[in-house]
Image (tube, rainbow, N blue to C red; front, side, top):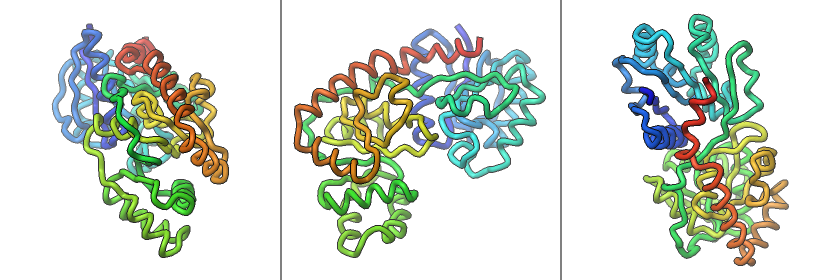
Length: 326
């Protein structure tokens, strides 16, 4: 039994991932303190500190607390789980100097630092530091099959921002103007309006604005949307070949997933339970096909839920992240 501090990031997906680790590690009998990075201001004894991306370096009070924890237990393991590209803003929250600051900190505490990556591509980004691979998992007791009717045709959950995502979403609006539903932060959707004007005419923009359905407050609500959608669209932003957290959320919810082509689907054994598109033309063809053939969707969904619950349940696998640093 270990004493573990888990630091929650300023990130929706990041917090969900870290809460999954908390649930799994507690189920194994470990003592776990879960705290927001902005609220970490006191120090005590811990065997492990698990944080997301650069974690405690983002907040000065949290960083000071970690230094105090190192004084209390000089052998504490500081595990950084990178589920984003460590060089991009998703990891450093716009603080570009964090990577350099992290290197400097690691020089002083190299024996304490353990890096774990969701994408094999980045394992060598921090030369000289112990690094290992651990793909993203999901809490299959939260994301599950609710047995709901499919009331949505095409859903997209997440930021409708960035050229690639907006290009894809605009093609769907053009071909299926009344079938797309978008769930996101109100601010993210508002910020997307100007960019979408580069792809859509005035009539199409009206359809785009009408597809917004608001923000989803809870994980259970998220899972129910995935479960009740004929097609869940996922457009990955992190990494070139890796999978984002939404991939596992949808599959665990027994949802049908259509996403951009990803090499990790093959390496993780998921290529037969996720339909991939090559480009926007292929995307439209596959949407048309799978909207029409319910039996095919249902067969793929059932296999997906079974596979993810057997191999990618974070509650069952949480202890493995500690094993990576032994």
